[in-house]
Length: 369
Image (cartoon, rainbow, N blue to C red; front, side, top):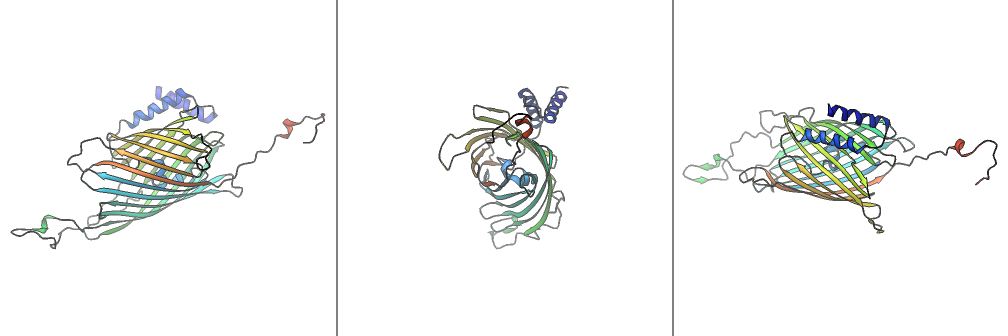
């Protein structure tokens, strides 16, 4: 009953555009946290999924008025001594009408690569294109719906692999002996279809107050098997949400969370973004802010990211640590991420016409300015 009342108050606030009520937001956040904490623990893909853009939700192609390019590099170290490297480049191109004041959509481009092991024992590289369309619900809120298609290629490198077939009785290990494995193809290409939508609510200064989105990848369930036995990928569902909780004394506090569901398993990531402006007259740092975002990721994993945000660029660093004892387990110990964003607002400000009727009264004389 309490959850229902909280939802009704939240919906009424959005419909009437009334100021944010702190008690309502706390109730809504507790409901969201209570839902996510009941899920099973699994690894999450990125420390800051919002910076992964079209890898998280193709609707990020039209999320704001910035033309942006984001380089996202992740390196992960496992408990068995192998590292996993994942560089990604995302480009978002917003689309406007002729006046360039109304954003009606956007295009997204993604170039991604995943490499496991120093010798690239397993690689997955590909390119994704996304198209998003904006639906304006009111002057302050909108919904972006998007579709996406990607071509990816998985490859396996068996150099350095050993199997029991290479151990000859009475002779020992013979590296020239065949592996006798059923791998028919060392490379496999596949198509990945995706879709997503994001709702957002902004204040009159275009600052983000609320956002929530859902997306799904591998909708076509492509076959990614290297052998003659087909293996269809499972559909991956992603969800994310966040809101501005407090903006006081130049400090902004924004809780946010992400969910990932695949093959009846769910993982989550919850965190809070603390952001404050940098009071400096330096040309390079003018109109910039610094944010710190601690996170908890399912599986008792802790993470934190630091980001310097300027209107034309952003630089970020994230670190993730797994404190569990993984001796003899194929889990990962730690990971770090480096993020570099170049952006430029390519929209034009809407010129508000003066209200002439309210400024002048009939029958009175005025000096022309």
